[in-house]
Image 1 (tube, one colour):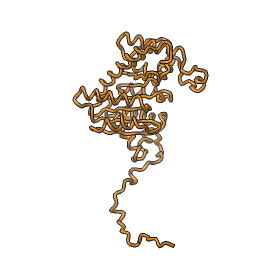
Image 2 (spheres, helix red, strand yellow):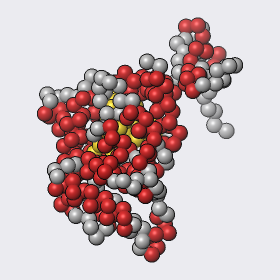
Image 3 (cartoon, rainbow, N blue to C red):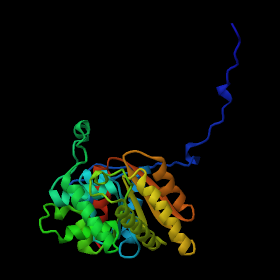
Image 4 (cartoon, rainbow, N blue to C red):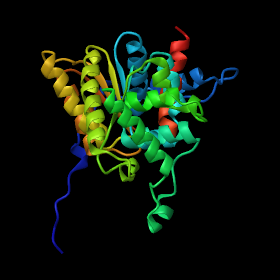
Amino acid sequence: MTDQREADFSKLRTVPVAHRRNKVDPSLLGHAPQTGDTSFAAFWRALPSILAAQDLRYVVDQIVAATGKRAVVAMLGGHVIKVGLGPLLIALMRRGAITHVAMNGSAAIHDFELAAYGGTSEDVAAGLGDGTFGMAEETGRDMNGALARGAAEHRGAGEALAEYLRERADLPGREVSVLAAAAELGIPVTVHAAIGAEITHQHPSADGAVLGATSHRDFKRLAGALTALHDGGVVLNLGSAVMMPEVFLKALTIARNLNGGTPKNFTAVDCDMQRHYRPRVNVVERPTLAGGRGIQLTGHHEILFPLIAWAVLTRLAAR
């Protein structure tokens, strides 16, 4: 049997625990509900001051601090609307805690369908089998029509869709529509198309020139809006894994190219169900290398974003 050398533990050097620097102490721990106060504010205070909970608090602090002073840009993927977060976004818009909404095409479609027809999110698998997926007549007709009118009037895609909804009398989902709220409140909304990735592009009325003109105008408008992030603004990427991170990175470089290297020193946040390469690199990391802070908060949209929204609205109500 081979003789194998063993470490001599009797010679190990130990140190007093009092000399060790600890990352966790009782002041940082979470706690259960206290008697007599089960409010949301109490719940928020009860969260641990550790890791993601502390990051969550920081994001809320930055949004509250930016409200009324700097830009807070919310970039939306489609699932954020599908899982019911439109009313929370609208509440933040009404309080001035969101100053610009940038949507991918999917988010715009879900919001438009909720507003105009009172429902959205079809059964993709069922429709794919017989070729009817995405072929809703009214969605393609009305959205493409609104964009065509917008292109003729030199509007962006977001403005064109928002104005169409604002003017339409029969709107069963008006109160839950982010697009309709943007038109009502005068908050800029931009829609960033990916040709062929959206069901409205399947419709006979789809016009590539219209899609390109209105979406390109919105790209310019987003680039113009980003300048107000400088020194304290917040950009939130909510559920877009590819489209909005790519658009944001290019819009940011345009803004910096035209404004002497600014905006800088803002908070960039990615909120999604899982962590992706593009949001991490294009939203959280690269844009904050020149100053500011990037944060990733990971969790289901329908749980994570209400925590952020409720915390911001509670803080603002206490001002």
